Amino acid sequence: MTKREQTGQSFASASPGELLKRRAMERQIEPIIAREERANSSVDVACDPFAHRPFVQALRERGVMLAPLLVQWNYKVPAALPFSKWLRTKEVLLSDARLQVNDNTAGVHYFGTYIVQSSVGAEMEEAGIRSVDCQTLWGYSDEVAMTHMFDLCRGRIERVSIVQNDLKDFVIGLKGHLAQVGPAHFSQTVLVAPATM
Image (cartoon, rainbow, N blue to C red; front, side, top):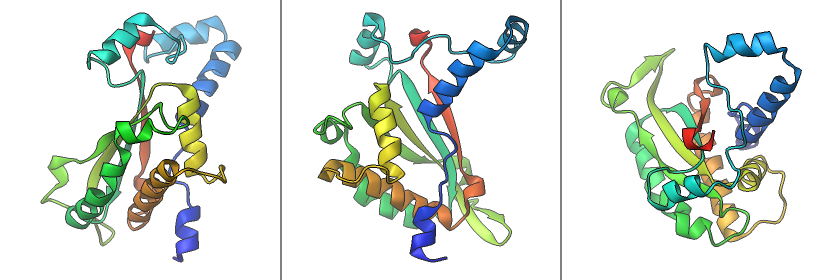
């Protein structure tokens, strides 16, 4: 696979913003009976997780809540050691203090990348490919920053700052590691803080 083909692949489903918009559309279209049936089996976000609420802000300031909306990327990489070596040179560039330098990324929070301990040392072998389970956790304080990050990483923004470029390079590098195992091993989970409901 050429480098051009690797960076052109998308390992994400819809962005968190798109998922929230779809949910809002579903709520407007679904009949009340279907909505009540779904409420018994899943969590329905009935409000905007980014709306200004003093209680939510207080929880964030005191470190009780990471962010109103978290996005967890679950994926596999070929091996733990080479991935962790690559990560050491990149993670430091995604500190909150650095991301807040740019207005467009101020609401983006990188909460780290983690190797799932159950898979370390017992690297999974699927179809002759060894792999390790990993998770990356992102937090978003506002919808504009979340949308900006996904647009940035999809190459929809042409002029970028150094901070934005480092964020984009991190995601592209991550996609390079993912490409070695394949996009079928990527999933995304959107977590909404209960205090925002």
